[in-house]
Image 1 (cartoon, helix red, strand yellow):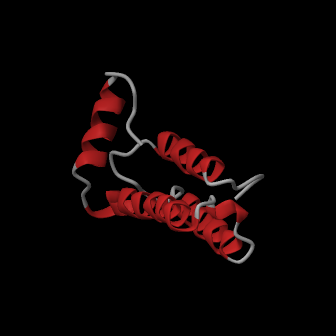
Image 2: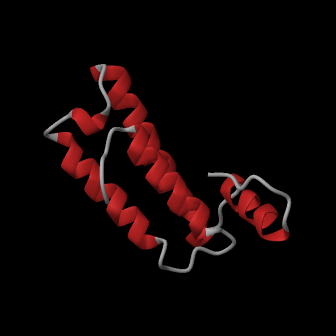
Length: 98
């Protein structure tokens, strides 16, 4: 979720990821969603995208978090967060749009 350069916007974004304030707490939602995918794979031995029961719910949560990026996210760069969400979905075996 961190921006990979030293431009002023990236520095502000990375600070917000490290120490989120108020409306920057969306990073906590993203982290929890990512951690859930990791835990599911560890526990079940397969990515959550291969779980016919859990996959639609996991996808829906990702869709909801992604939608919240349209709100005021403070110092966060929503494009960077959007990429993190889609990268997580892909790694979890979710194909297509959220």
